[in-house]
Length: 60
Image (cartoon, rainbow, N blue to C red):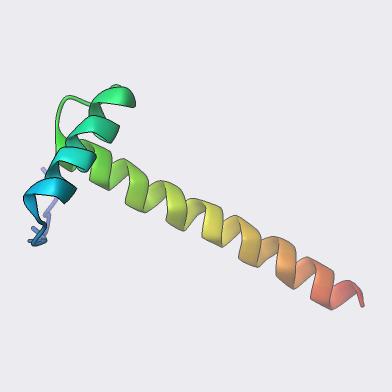
């Protein structure tokens, strides 16, 4: 198994409830899976935006 790192995040009970609700609505059983998905999905989108930006800037 690949080495992994654990990240500890402090959240309020209200934030935990919101997180649990969003995770469940998205089909995730665990909050950690939802957080991992959300984090890397946004990174993927950010990379794509940066690639598009680079192409647009280079074409000017």
